[in-house]
Image (cartoon, rainbow over all chains, first blue to last red):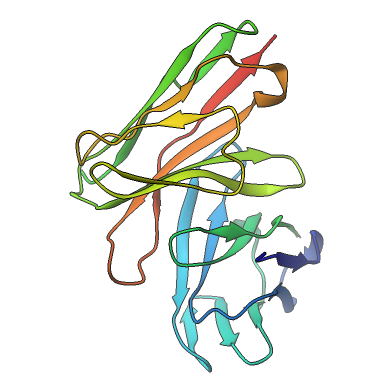
Length: 108
Length: 113
């Protein structure tokens, strides 16, 4: 059974600092998704990673995928308050498995 | 505007009273899916559909039914709701055939007393 683990589950950062969220999964998959959820809102897509070594960047967020290690990372560079949200990784083709989410709080 | 809509957005009901949560998308997506979100558990997939008349169980299908009679609609049916089905429900859709991000509806908060 496919399991997806994220860590940390809670992350409090100072503005301007860097940090990384990790997403490990238990079975082979060559596609991984990152989503963002603002409090009380729905989910929106951030990245789709489709192959080993894939790297995508959008603003202060950069996601990468290592299919051999079954690991994806979401790196935050010089955090700003607007990045405060819950971030989910998800793995699968049609039957999707989501991680528990990382609640990020960026403090001034 | 491309969107996924769900109705109702909020629902309080009693144990055993059948209910349906509707989901509709206007993007001509083949794939649709239902999830429930519970604190600390992330999203768990209930059912998904690859196309009209094609549905499959997800991770937590017990107590739920779905149907896909039209491409744009994917209703979630709770025949006999129980308190453990109190949750936040999301419908999502995406293109099929290619790896594609899902577009999520606004969510339906269901409380079963």
